[in-house]
Length: 211
Image (cartoon, rainbow, N blue to C red; front, side, top):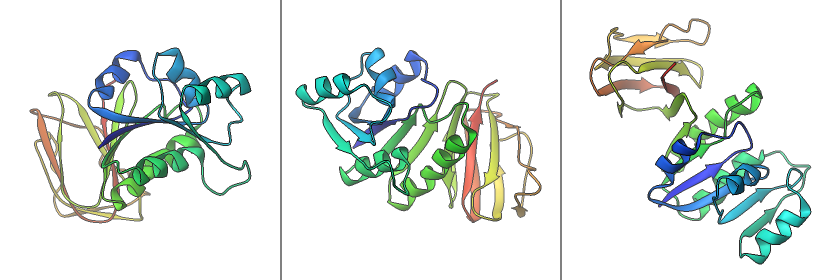
């Protein structure tokens, strides 16, 4: 089951929402994400969070329309985004697209990228998308599809990352260990429409970007 999990970061462009809503059987909003979701005409199946960013009358209206409201304490260790992801996983999602999960709060953006590891560790496929990027997390070889000329970058998420090889990219990288203090694997380029990153060990964030 495909699920969209929406965050309260920068709202994505409508065309990105339209692209990813196709085939989705569940929409989960993390707290204030419901504001931009409703403005774009999306009706969530659930809103998860401490509800500090949503008007009470809007919550009453959603509840009357049958939307599940998972109200959380504001004093918690988990972010609303993590709780929304966990809600989708418990509902049986095996594909999760994160939208509205990047923006001016870089701490939240980085934390949401790390949620891709959580999704993968629960056996689901996840990606974080905004107007200019798609981000994946992987600890094993991964094949990705994009237009020729798309940039691909790799950054470690867990200490070091061992790369066996890269395929379908302009710049080679063979038998190399990526470390946080030396971000070498930045701005590689698709030479066709398919690329493969052969990860041998460690968790990496893989960015597909278009300026």
